[in-house]
Length: 113
Length: 114
Image (cartoon, rainbow over all chains, first blue to last red; front, side):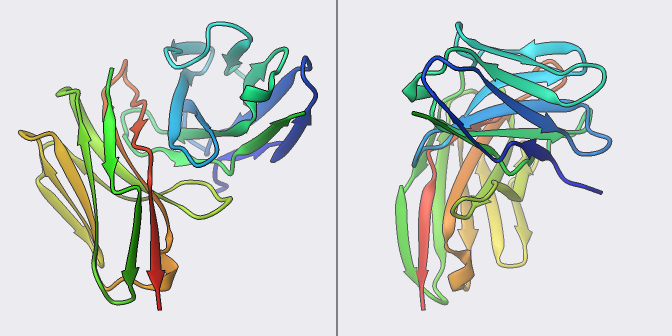
């Protein structure tokens, strides 16, 4: 049973470009959470999604950031017009319905130059 | 919203000693408290968790205690080994529309010296 998959593992973007981060949950998991980790800091909740639904996006910046989890395919976190402050590690986690345990992917390290 | 505070931010112990990390939370609706271990450049890994209807849970050298009245919970690692060196994060979670978004502490960097 493959774990949570994320790609790409490393992403370099110039200021003003778009970044697309992908997350495939574990088999049997229908809940996806995205977290951001700034250097030497904890993880900050961004958004929680189920298939075709955004359940809670209270941690997501109001502008430039969006997320989706389509019926088919991975969940995608999209950052438009990236700025240097977006440089961070972005982790997704998944869980089963009704279960607390969240399992994390390896993360995508975004560097904005 | 939930606010989780974690102490200490760094902890250095000698191999074989015990290590204790403490967290407090603010939202009385929180009912799930996991601990994650993160090695440098790696993903956070769930090492132990506790639910609000339990006061203590143990798994080999790792134990977690929860005091709901005082809103604090702690991680205890006994007989520490160099491979325990990592950053440890506590988290708290209220149930949220059938899911459980985690609010993390800022982490404790644990160093176990031989």
